[in-house]
Amino acid sequence: MSEIQENEIQTCEVSESEVSESEVSESEVQETEIQESEVPESEAPENERKPRKLLITGGTNFVSRYTAEYFAATGYEVTVLNRGSREQAEGVTLIQADRTDLGGALDGLTFDAVLDICGYTEEHVVKLLDALGDDFKGPYILLSSSAVYPEGNPQPFEENQPTGENYLWGGYGTNKIAAENALRERMENAYILRPPYLYGKYESLYREPFIFDCARGDRKCYIPEKEMSLQFFNVRDLCRFMELILETQPENKVFNVGNPQTVTVKEWVTLCYEAAGKTPEILRVSDSFPQRSYFPFHNYDYRLDVSKMLALMPELTPLDEGLKEEYEWYAETDPPMDRKSYFEYIDNNLA
Image (cartoon, rainbow, N blue to C red; front, side):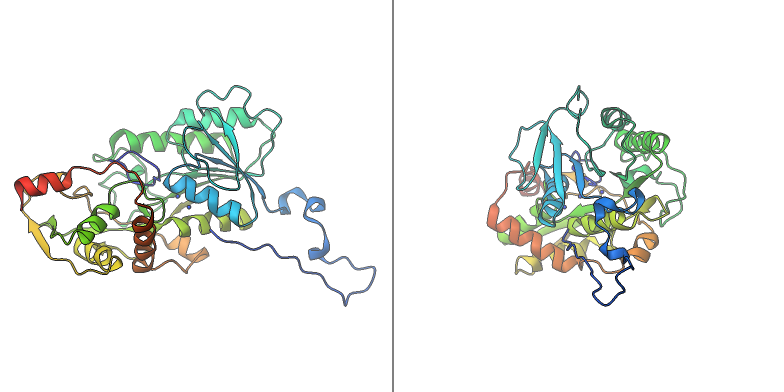
């Protein structure tokens, strides 16, 4: 799931990766031979150059911030596009503009690739492509969402299944579908990534942080009576996969991304407590109580088939390791976020 609204799959919510650039030189070749690795990248055919100048939308919150920092730290020339209302990531160049009213903000600028972390609507994609101009040929990576799959599709959801409205995600999902379609109509060298719930450093939604707060306060944890499964993807792995796409530009253009394993709610809560060095006391709550009043996930059970991603990138961050890293960041920084009134509801209705 990208930076998104509280009731959206974060993809967004949507993001948040390390690379090294190496040159190989051959000293034991005849003077008249030119080794492929000796050709400067600037002189290589255009379709063989690795993208180095990136435009990243957003760059200040959760996935987009992690993405900007990841690529800046690994040697890419990163430009971020946002309204300039928050602190910027280190090592980036800011284009301060509203993406729906770009005017001439991109005039005279060229980019090797676009990582569109905050493209939520058709208008977002169309106006950015218009501003980039006809000379931009991609790659363009759009962070979409698993919300594009209708709940009635066979599970696990596969990339070749039809997209459509999902009863839970509503307009968020249909807007993502429109953004995907607009991109594919305009750009041949375009990639679409559909994650489940994203987590990790810079988390901006009160999901893992809520359970961390339960653990730090030695509180009991209330979870739904009906067990359900959750699927996650670490923002670092998302960035690693985007980097892999930039470097290899695979033939397949649409990827479900995420950990292949799902976990139950109880398992997830236990891992969050363990990340904080605690053991949870878990209590089940009847479905007569509204789940979203005391727990940070909707009553929705689904799974993505991520085999296409795994064929290119089989090694992923274990969930327990990723949660521990997120907890350490959260405990150290105590970041501002919209802390929902779960505790108030629990204390007044469940405790």
